[in-house]
Image (cartoon, rainbow, N blue to C red; front, side, top):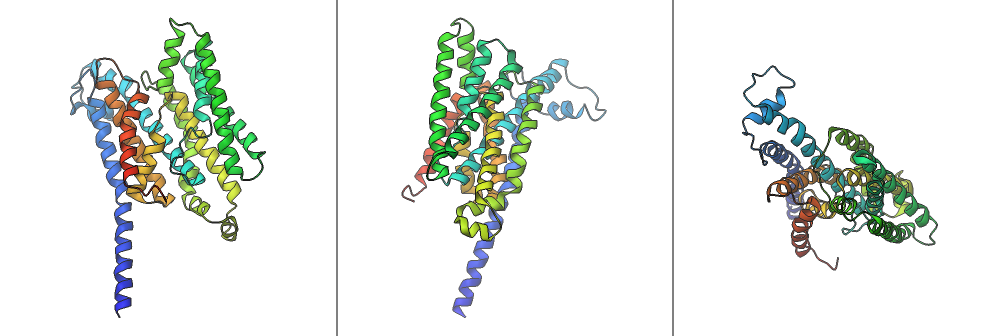
Length: 351
């Protein structure tokens, strides 16, 4: 009787925790909607909060115009692309970080672990040096990001022993190679115009976001995000031994490769349109595990929404804290480091 009562109470407590964790996602989504509305109103040109939904809905419904043309231009043409791009990049980097951490069983894994970020930086610096324009910079950064990861995988797959360790070591080497190439391009760049442009891009920024970049980012991120969200339950099996996973019908090698490719695609698309934005893919997944647990079926949707919320809030601060805009990559470091230290303080580092 006592054992039965104990088991019943333990089962009830477990179910309560699961329901509580699943209830986190609607709360985060509601907070994201509130922040979206607030972000449209907050800026150097103030737009009344009550006018924001009217301006946004005016393109769909016959709403009487009670706003100025400057308000409409600010909301629809300047802030809308930037806000949506911040949500896309924040969610993509966070989801990529969670995927890498799940594959490599390492909470310190980040989206730039396989050289995607350093390759994108080299491509962007090269495009700026060759004066290829903003669209050319985005496409070149994306191409070199994928190229760097392809080199990492080819080099790591030929390594004897553990393929995962080989890929990680190849990532370090290829990242160093592309970082050296970026430094060489900065040495060749004109110090009056091109060098400041390269330096500013490397610090990360969403300033001047365009609708075309938004469409490119969404189209490139979708093939990376959807498989991860659909395969969350299978990714949980990567924690098992390969024999056990195979007995459940899962080929761990193929699954690991698919997850790496999806996470790389998310990273490449994000870095190509926003520059180097660090800490998002490291901090947000660890914070999400505190809220939703380690089950990837719950973790991946949570990390997607929380990442969008985190980067949108950081971008709001970057464009409004000072008279001149602060590169968002600097702010994510200032915000991310204290968050990560708090997360580390609550963990058993020996585990």
